[in-house]
Image 1 (cartoon, helix red, strand yellow):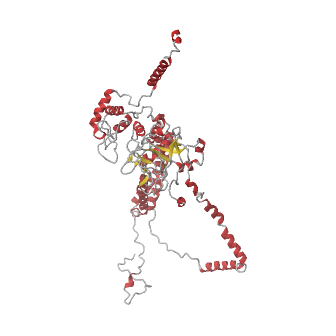
Image 2 (cartoon, rainbow over the protein chains, first blue to last red):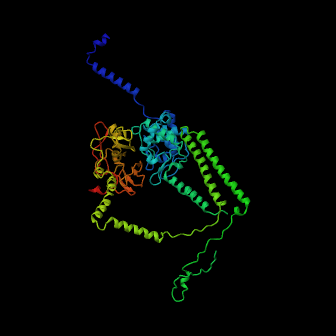
Image 3 (cartoon, rainbow over the protein chains, first blue to last red):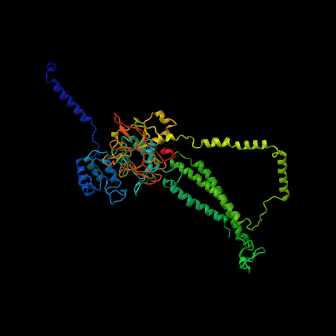
Length: 259
Length: 349
């Protein structure tokens, strides 16, 4: 310590101190900095498998390095969440052109989906696949979820998530069958016509509230048959055709003479 | 009953022309009531007995329905879950339907099969009173008129007329004046947006940083006001005019603003109230940049100054000019420069 104290006025002392400070700052930052969002299990092998799958199944439209072509957007930076959503719901790989890519039985199994997601996530940072806790509706507040859903989602997806029409053959799908993970991913990534609702707009807690609200809608309506929750169209059809039919039938029966 | 193949002309037909044959089709004889047909139950006592038993059976089914509804009420209490409420309501409803329909169907069947089915004819009678009553009433009125002396006392006639004519005003004036409530149409021209008001998420009220919005994001926006103001009664009226849809586009996609320089780095803020009849326009399609109104399918192109590309809306949505303050939050630069929502007579004055 004496030697250190003696040299503290040395003319190189500030330089040494500055270097030390930089080293410490850099070290602490490296230890604490948030790691870029990526699938947890992304190993180099996964990424390699994913790349091969990508080149076999997706590269025709999205380009050999996922840089996008005139037919399909670039996938650099879309993140694992977008890939998992599109592939696990069967929307991608797309089978044919249409107003929008529709959900169908998935073409890739879970491992292949994870490998593809890992590959695309390795191309550029993007939203990661949500954790089980983030999508657990039982931990959410359904009442707050309803307020958020009403403001942000109900105009396209219907007040209870039964889906609805958009322009030119596009539509917002029903959410009754959609998995919690896919609902979360759709909000996060904004697939196709749907806008993006990132974590600043609807926080992860609020997303879980929305999932809680949608979970409750799956139990149906307390009032009996919901008739698809489509409002006046299906209800009117029942009232006018079935209801009025019964009333007319009763009137005819009452008025007819007994034999 | 008469079975006339050729209807006979009745006596009071005015003959038409020389030979009178054309006039013969004008009137028909009353064909009378069709012959009474007996029902099976009228002639066959067995059939009558069968119907009696059937009616009694339906009444018994109704009794079972009533008992069933009581059983459902006590045995299947709603347990608070949606499915529980649904089951309880459904059972109660079905049991009550059986009960009431049973009574109705049995009663109608009783009347149709067992009660008399003989046809009766009731002739219409004249609706006017007899001549004596009519002349007595007329005399009473004339006596009353003479007694009141209206013809001799014009002042009384005028004053009673005035009183009767004025009275309806006490009902009509409050009624008419409360129609529409508030005639100040000037307030349609302004919203609570003004220079420096920050943009906040609806419904949480969190402030919005420009950097938080990724390309393709949509945010439903209300003006940033205090918590107390948002609890107040006036807030819902103000919010109804001030709601805004915030969209971030790739700046390369943004062809033009509806209001010069109103966007900020690809972020545009448009009024959410449709210019057709005022529905909230909020179905935004990210890929086409089209904003669709759910009521009448008016479609606005957000990338092209919210131009109307389809539907009955007449003009683009008003644009809110926005910028970023020194803390990075989005703020309004001004109020809308035109009234939001549908047209009204005074709009262009």
